Length: 133
Length: 83
Image (cartoon, rainbow over all chains, first blue to last red; front, side):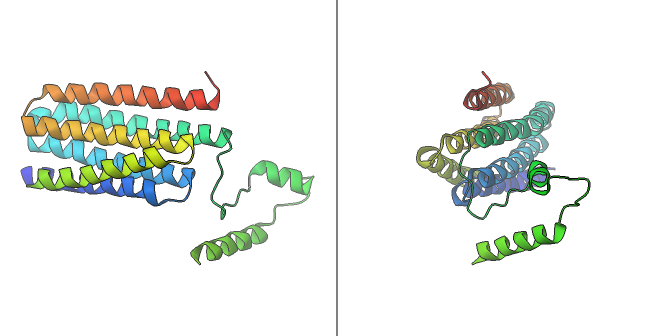
């Protein structure tokens, strides 16, 4: 039990470090949100459950805190992403934006002209090859 | 021993978060860095309760998580123009 708790604490701290490293290394606000919220959520969850496993008297409050972290971190990341999308924060130059409204305005009549999937996939491949260079 | 290694990793994470908090080009970067630092601080308080062997520090961690969440959501809604 204690060994499992210590292993969970070590894994959690490593994931916290990787999340903070992703905040530094990612090129864009929206990429940084992915790195800084998901990895940090996993790290905090693992560390809190590990502390609860080492001493059993911590376990109930650790479960409450882990549930709270898991439930509220996606909400805050979604709110940050929504705010930065509405503020028109500049994206990474390899970003492809293709929403449903773009299909409707491009084709004019969406029922008669189905969307061209092959062209879209080609453009995504080209962008990914360009970003790999 | 494990807790010392974990604190070294978490200290490096706090330093990287503060670099992004200071040098972020937009205000969304700074808000995201503040959110990440809130989660990291919650984990540090939980580790501190394990080191000091006091269960009451877990309540401090719960209250800090609640206040950090409310603060981040409030600032994000203010930037969005909802408030």
